[in-house]
Image: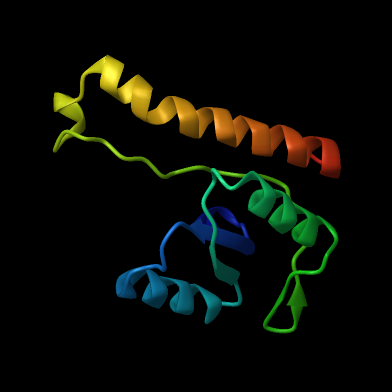
Length: 118
């Protein structure tokens, strides 16, 4: 997203990022981007609401810059029980992602109502 012009990015992780991800975040921040890592699970509705309210209230700061109101979201997490996507059965795929999609839609709808900027 940063290569497409996104300057302010909040990356949410269920667990702390691995060393390589931390290094990439640091390198992006050295190129005048504002990328922060935040421990948060998409299934934590209250946590997501607090984060969105913090961002939209312009209370999120990093490197002497204030993050603007939320303008978009991307949910890229997933767990696939088979070793490759090619071996994944549709029913198992649907079972795995249905909860994530539903939660993302709830968060998206909540942020849409809150920000009115989408």
